[in-house]
Image 1 (cartoon, helix red, strand yellow):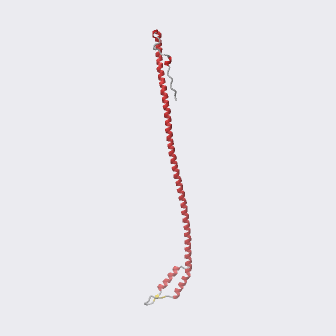
Image 2 (spheres, one colour):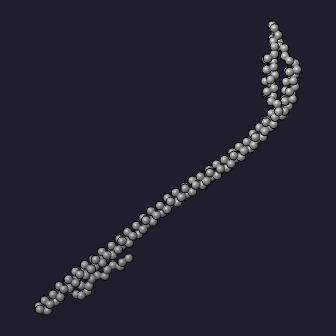
Image 3 (cartoon, helix red, strand yellow):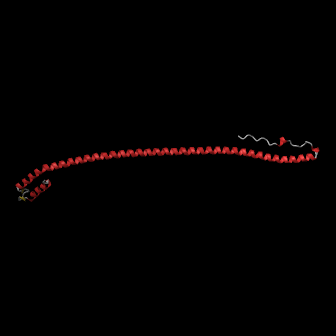
Length: 184
């Protein structure tokens, strides 16, 4: 295949190397040589145009394929973006829900701790009152026991001194400790 550019370059060389006519811009060229180059150029042009058409159609095909590929890549990227956004949204919602649950659990635990502390404090206060009353009853009982020992000493004195009579003597019911209040 003859290159069109090469034929044009040869034609230019023939015209440039042609002999000039004196006092004129005209030149003498070899007609057969120029016509031969023009014929070759005419023959080469259709194949050059066909090659150009082939390159253009190939270019269009390549560009169409590239366009299709770019649209496919863009669509895939948009799907990936949507999936990632959805996943990050789900993750954000899950984190928010977890934080709400954690806060609710903390609040509930704090309320349970306060309720437990209040219950234990109430039970301890009741136990303290019961122990105080029991201690009072024990102290009173001990005091009366000490008083009974004193009564025994009085009884012995009365037996020795019959003039004392029943004045100032304590009865056994008076020595009995009072009933403790019911524990509730």
